[in-house]
Amino acid sequence: MRSIAIMKRVLKELLRDKRTLALMFVAPVIILLLMSFIFNSNSSTNVDVATVDLPTSLNSNIGSTKHVDVHKYSTKKSAKKALKDEKVDAIIQKKGNNYDLTYANTDSTKTAAVKQVFSASLTKTNVSTMKNQLVTTTTALAKLTGQTAPSASSNVSTPKIHNHYVYGDKDTGFFDKILPVLMGFFVFFFVFLISGMALLKERTSGTLDRLLATPVKRSEIVYGYMLSYGILAIVQTIIIVLTTVWLLGIEVKGNIISVIFINLILSLVALAFGILLSTFAKSEFQMMQFIPIVVIPQVFFSGIIPLDSMAHWVSDISYIIPIKYSGDAVSAIIMQGTGILSLWPDILVLLGILLVLTFLNVVGLKRYRKV
Amino acid sequence: MQTSIINLQHLVKKFGKQTVLKDVNMNVLSGEIVGLIGPSGAGKSTVIKTTLGMEVVDGGSATVFGETMPNRNLLANIGYMAQTDALYDALSGRENLAFYGQMKGLSPSELKREIKHVAQVVDLTKDLDKRVSGYSGGMMRRLSLSIALLGNPRLLILDEPTVGIDPALRRQIWAELGKIHNEGRSILITTHVMDEAELCDRVALLLDGQVMAFNQPDVLKMQYNVDSIEDVFLKAEGVQ
Image (cartoon, rainbow over all chains, first blue to last red; front, side, top):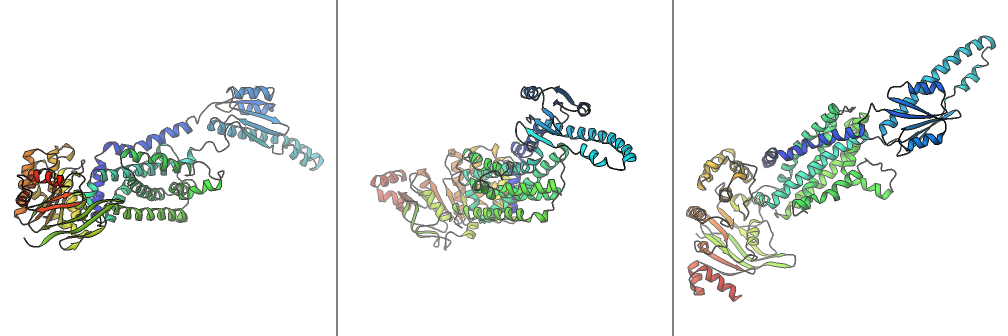
């Protein structure tokens, strides 16, 4: 009963704090929109392609594609200079039977566009070549009963394509990839900060002492906070999910309810974390100091940056990072449509962290009242 | 007037290496106002926190209503008012009262009656639905006092209830305390203001973690051979 009363009070206070509400609900939407503009802005971008020694048919096929301009260069050297001077975005060169593609890759969408255009054009050219050869072959077949067939197929044997990147690699464009992690990050960051601040304020204003001078149980205070911030996190997650789905047009393959569920657990972890750390802070400013120490490393080990390339002892840190688990789970739901039941290891770890932190909080409140 | 509501015996409290309370002996009888005076840093707030069970004694014993503190359930019978107002600014006066009332475990019908009653006592009835952030300092103090009065507790523990308020309001609060006193309830109050000490039934002088003197104001004045509690205080401090 008391937990419900505490929940109602916390929610009432928050609802009257319009700025904090805006921070929780509007800020993530704005940041997500901005990020999507920045990462995916020019999807109908114009690309300039330098071609060296390309067959005329292929050249004209590439050039006939919308938003693509072809510049012919006689040598690779002059093409490279143009690439360096940012006159072109990619170089396509034919070396023997194979193709060498070099991308500036400063804009991942341009790289993707060139790749797509090239492979489409190549297929188109091959098909017409094959068509021609088929005609030749069929006429020859009539005469020589099939002996020319192998030589014909060796002629159109698929050319190898070598991709080269001036900057980064093929995974550089990753807004879609980081989105699930980002979602969790917003939930974690705002709940952590606001709940931590709220409990800190209770402590510094003396309301916590007064609260503890009533027969309320320590656990009831923690549960009351969990209930209120849990509700808040659900609303926040719904807003973020709707933003990503409706405004950014990102496909969610799995169940949206599952996404909300995972983020709810994460928010409770963030809440417990915020409450725990607020006991080590003497002022709001000291609470802010936890951001670079506690929140930023969450981003590094959350899976936004690939962990496989790190030293083992460094990447092992990710095992204690809650956002890693929620990010993995939400990624699986959004991208692969994984059901929530098969994500039980991630959920179990999150619940484990939550349980430990909650226990520590209930015990930690003993600092202010001994029973 | 016989039973001991609060009984502190040889209370010792240490924070780290610092011993804040060395040997505190005092009691509050039923229906009595006991004033706890002493310079800042003497350990007044520590005595109060120990009595409430927020701190555990390192030596001696603290009992309230005959039970050893800390004891969570006993807190329902104690009205506590801290040095700070400890109010939720974003909520109205009524919402603050309702919240603390719920924490004290009042039923909804009791709550309604109690809020009405305590608001009348501190004269806040018509401002009850305003947000606390719009209250004046005196109104906040009165609201804070009314929260302590919720649920008709048998014991009131007030930590500097009149600090930083104007004389008219101070007199008003003391008038209230007088009424509570007449109802036979007990009050433990800390104060800096010496003429308030004269209004108490008994006064405990806390100095350097020890109770230097504990008696009726008139007796103390006679003992120290001075005219006012303020002089008693100064003399006791001088003795140290």
